[in-house]
Image (spheres, rainbow, N blue to C red):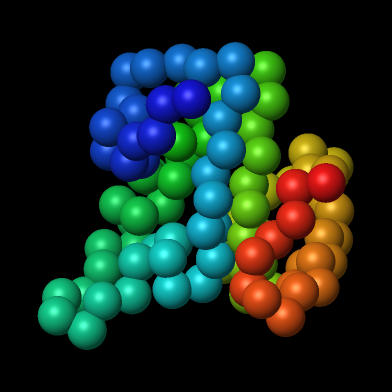
Length: 95
């Protein structure tokens, strides 16, 4: 597993790419200290998506990035995943 930023992925390719956090506020990045360049943010997401040679998985959450609306519906497969119930002690079971 290689973990990197979208910036760091330029020029690389991987069999499978996961982009986690493709949600509103993250892509494009909303920051109080400086305004985001929406076209640069869109380009960075495109760079990350095109690093996938075989499989691309975008994890978005309840409020997905507005950029995901630009992807043709026929190119997407979506899946709703429910959060597992947590036990009272805060420890998740692996079995």
